[in-house]
Image (tube, rainbow, N blue to C red; front, side):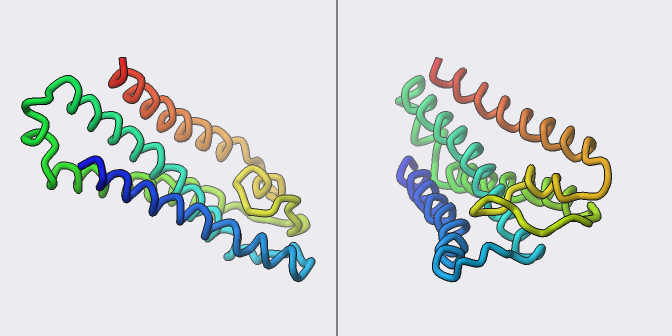
Length: 162
């Protein structure tokens, strides 16, 4: 089961690189830092999805180690292939759902300022600076969802290692 989680983690690392590096290399070669709004939003969605999947996947891996250490004789019964596949799939789905919520909240905003973002990849805080309206509900939702996901996953990981 551990190797299934490690395979997912390595696939996730490949996703991180393929989200940011191609656009960064294109910008360095062409000296053009412009990106379309749909391209920016797809990059934000993929990046946030990768971050969310990593949180959930590391939590599932912590649970796997908890079961292996605290219940070694029942480990193969508790963490069978079906359970591990379900945990990995749930990690990917929760991470993707989290990114869809965050991206949809930003996508609905009207943008009226310059489309230049002074970063080598798109992220939500620079996009919020380009919006014409009050972005405090988006900032609150971002803080709330990010805080709940981060705190919950961190808490489960700390408790499992404790």
